[in-house]
Length: 50
Image (tube, rainbow, N blue to C red; front, side):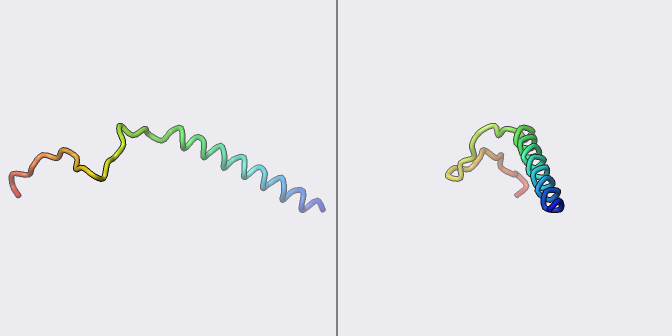
């Protein structure tokens, strides 16, 4: 019975740790300057050597 309690406590600890890591990763993720549209090409200068 004590093995199940220890396993349950470990699972709760891992779940809380994963939640904290997920929140930190979402906060540290850089914000995009704007949304990317797949219907129009971005302004790219022409390559004169091509």
